[in-house]
Length: 161
Image 1 (spheres, helix red, strand yellow):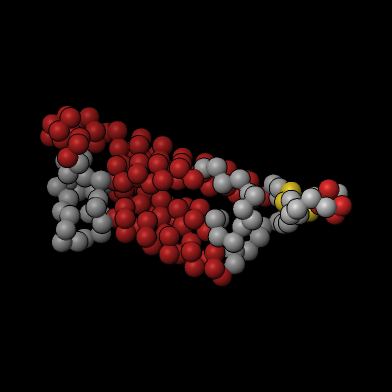
Image 2 (image 1 turned 90 degrees about the vertical axis):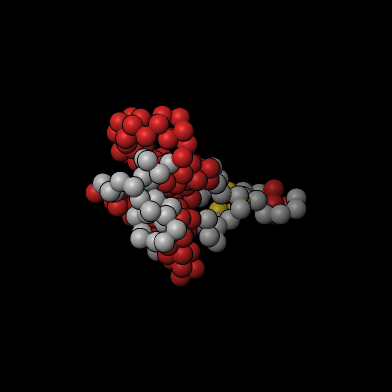
């Protein structure tokens, strides 16, 4: 059975999705802004990756709201790594100073740019895996201890679902 999101979880999902959309969209110049200018046009898939990253990151962030602390929270770093990968994937290859320093402008266009769709796919797969792991852990309904040892606490652990 699919559980509905609480209003607080929905608010966190929307806020996190908006924050990720700004954090990924502004530096990659997918959102027009006066701070960053894109040297090459953005391919069509950059916008899809940007939106998917924002939405899935928002849902992932919402899973951390109002949950028992005993629940496994494993893939926290995977979500952050996936968002960094998305920034690298949708960013302008010539605007990335590290890539230009390592490969030069022609290397950025001929080597890095063809790798960006693969990086985008890997970042989205990692983000999807992190969300799947988190939802699986939440659905497992772990046993939560009852506090200090007593006759009631030594009996079967309570299940909070």
